[in-house]
Length: 115
Length: 114
Image (cartoon, rainbow over the protein chains, first blue to last red):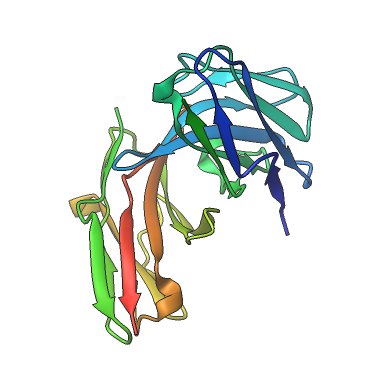
């Protein structure tokens, strides 16, 4: 079974803090994704990565950056957290043959509260 | 632009009832993929089905079935004889083959009461 883990289930940060959300997958998947989930909006893609050190902007990249130094790990960075970044953050991975057309496997999510 | 509409925000049924979750999509591509995911209270999205635009056959998996109709741009999901464990938020999603993007609907929260 594919396992995608996220470093924290719940996180509370203050406005202006730098926030790191970590995601690790154990199935040697090529692709990794970061989404945020908000009520009434579903999931929105922030960034994704097809390979180590590669990244592509999703639908809402503003205010975020990512890092993929190793294949199994994909980090989401909030350089200066703001209250409108309070949300549920979901990481996903997929095998890598067909990019966004493939089945994605999701982690349990990190619920971030920015005060 | 692609768009996925799940018009039903919340549905509540009593156990053993059948329930259909609607999904309507918009795309200009001829090649695209449709997905359904389930998000139980634990938060982790669970993959249910993936369908490409060239395969209009309906699919049945146990109590779950999917009705894909290109003529109405719909990909509806039916749960037969619902159970309490089916309570979750269900998401429909669309991805175009030539577009580096993935769009999810807003989700439908299904509550199955005993």
